[in-house]
Length: 596
Image 1: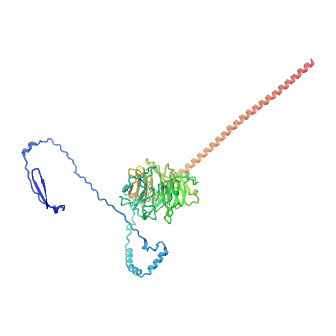
Image 2: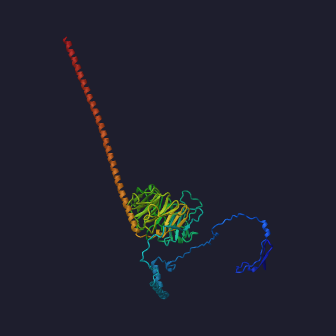
Image 3: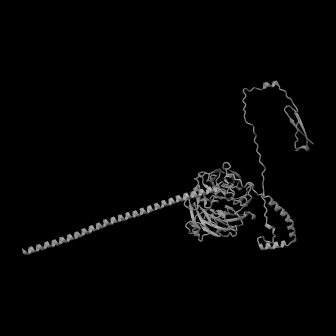
């Protein structure tokens, strides 16, 4: 079969292309061929009368290269994570690997088997060869250890966006908490919750997610709580376990090997009464202990092996009477593993409460308070290099405190136009810390380089930033926004590499500022004592003046009384004398009458 295609021109010239049906769709084979002249149309001078000459001619010319724009979208690549759970030793089902007696009995049984001895002898030579190879070459050897590391800053401080993880739900929620995977930080757990009062809709999702940093298309795992999660933390000892605090006050924990549903939850009657804003894992042998804080004024300790009720309870009553009605609402928590008995609580009232867990009575557990903010303390963290100094983020400032000074902070940032919502120290450099603000800005501070302004200020997104978390190596950090966007940023090496003599310089600055605040505090104390003594002296003078006025009034009254007494006595005396003279006069008149 053949197909004819005709092409008609205005001059009735017809070209016929013939092609077999079997060749349709086949790849074209092009080849070089000299040009062929098919039609030659000569000019016709008679046609010039039909045209009008254009004079002058306007022609627009651009002195630029002609460009064409093309858009290409690469094919979307979807990856599915797969994992293998390896059980140590490959023990039989009837042998419990945790029981030492059973494992010893099974080993003895295997060692008596002839196949085991023969296999071991065969593998011995191969194993010896591999060990000798490893001993011959050290693949981890560093050849330039003795050379000094270049300490200079590599260009200007900078940060760039690496990945963006968005809330997959239609109704967007706030990314309230971030937690890095403890092994390699290849995953990021994000808690989502709506923090606006009475703005939760019926179709709003309660789910939170675990994201793989290499796959931003969809979360690796979904956590399904009964109430939206406000905070979420990986267990540093077991990366499969996470604990979260819910909006309704309950505590729940997940095991990623067991699915999306929580393994166990706390009972409602023994949980917090307000949203749980912070939960932290404690340093313990079992790795199952944690404690949580809420705005209901309580700090509760939990053991995930028994979540029915808390193991311990502390009411943040500043009067140390344990009255829940007078308790300060807790908004942030701080626990340093090097200080296992101490912990700190940031409150809604802008006060930091320092506590001691091992105290005998609840009243002794509250050691002291630090006050200096005008609003809730959203972030509280000790410096990883100098635990005596801690950072607080609240209202419009971030402040650095020393444990030795309670009346005021030793260093602070300027008051910003936007409200600060979170902050933390750099785990790699003692003088660097990070803050995020409600205008979507991330500020990186290096107080050895600059104290009045941030070293780097970066506009991360248009909506408000709510949460912040730095990776353990200090190179990557995550920011959670009000619309549920978690942004992964990579900062320049100069901001995450320990500089020369940085620890010594930071120590000197902390000590100098602490000493300055102590001197100022002593001066203020002396001024207060002088004012107090002056006020007491003035009160004594006023009392003396009052007594003098009272004594003068008494003297006047006494003089008046004595005067009137003297006058009355004189009047009585005169009355008696007049009476006697009258009687005497009357007696003389009687004698005269008798004589007459």
